[in-house]
Amino acid sequence: MTRFRPCVLLLILLLTVLFTVGCRGEDGTETLPPETESVPETERESETETVAVSFAEFDELRKFSGFLQKYGTNNKSIARWNALVNDVHFRRDSISQAQVDETVQTLDTMRRRVELAQGELPRIYLSSSLAFNKLKKDVETPACAAIVDVKGGNSATLVEPDAIVHLHGNSSKNSPKPSLRLKLSEKQNLLGMRAAKSWVLVSNTFDPTLLRNQLVHDLSRDVGFESALNCRQVELWYEGTYQGVYLLIEKKDAGDVVKSYMDPDAGDVLFESNSGRTEAETFYLTTIRYKMRFEVKEPNTLPNETLVQLKDALYCFEEALHKRSWSELCKVMDAESFVEYYVLCEFFKPWDFSSYSTCYYFKDGRIYSGPLWDFDLAMGNANVNRNTANAKVYFNLPGYGVEGAESGNSAEGIYCAENTHCPTHKWHARLMEIPEFRAAVAEYYLEILPYLENLYQDNELGQNRLDRILAECGDAFARNFSETSWRPDDIWFQDFMDQSPSPSYEENVERLRVWLEQRTAWLLREWCGE
Image (cartoon, rainbow, N blue to C red; front, side, top):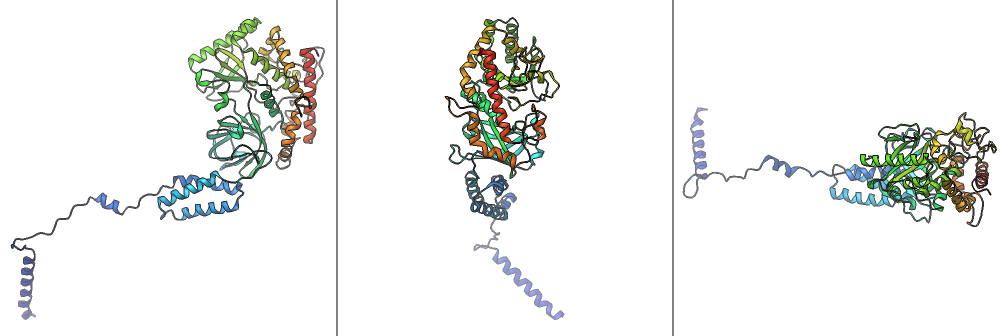
């Protein structure tokens, strides 16, 4: 093998010469490889990194899928929706942002134009992750909502993907059919009513006719009561299950509703009677002379200057009331609203009058009465068997009713101005002792008498209100009892009514009609001597 070494050495020498010559320029000088520009490590990575695709809007729209499956009526649209959603979902690792954006635009258009079933009453469809019987008053639950007008109605379907729902009220929240609060993401004119974000769905669970609250609000609008509220009977579905007929009503302290009669931003205050309940983050005040306790509803935060003005007005009002000075009273109260409010309340006879839900507002240095609220336990719908002074006064029982005219009939007797046994009724009892106020009450009662009579019988105003509502809502009212778990004679009603409810809806309506007729005649004799 040693004989091959000279050849190897010769080969190495030759390669060295060739490399040296190749690294020199034409002038024989040594050359270096050309410099390459240094590329930062981060830039090298960005050249190969895939641009992140945002799916935020798509994921929000995808939440609507469950709502669409429960309530949508156009099968082709539902199939197309599902295909679009699935296409994006299964291509999340490869789809472009432009393709996602295009799908989002298509889905959003489909959501706004979703086809939902309509009926003879407007419908509200709700979808949420929480079961109906698990809703709470103090827990806001995200929901998707749709408000659908009747066929040929003037309101376009509203789809609200970011709604909030929770229980509303006190007694009703524990019933099988609770009232609800519905909050929207922005102010909306639902079914032609005034714009607001917050709305109330009143269940009327204690009213076997489902009519009492609507009668009050319809009448108050007909007679021009300044703070009257609008309402519509609707049918409600929750998570695909029919929940019955609810009264969608403007919330008295919300949006354009409250601003129609007062302005919280300008120092006006809405407050209502609350004789016993206490809730967190709520401001209460009690008057000095008559110990009337109120809850402030608006504004949410009461400036100290406004609080001082309100307390001063309440003090002057009660002092003038104590002296029965009409001239001094008229300086601190709006006499017209006080007269109208008292007449309407005494006529309809709400069980909770002046204990709860009796509303006032402070505006331009004076106290006004209104708006009207909470009349399901009214018009005889109370419990005579409650062993309380209020119950005995309500039913005009001997020793508690109008002296010499005790009858045991709740359609008779004075309730809202009875002070001997109902301590929270002090204000109106005192007002009715003032001749000017009493005369104004009689005058106003005669003025609205045709409207009161038209509640239960036809007159110059046309078909009576009861029959008009029944013609529009009768079939839905029947479904409220036939297609749900509640009945007109449910035990829940019996705890509150003057007697066990009649077994049929028609019988309960007739009892209400008779009560209204008797009440109209009795107050006409009591106040007007006719």
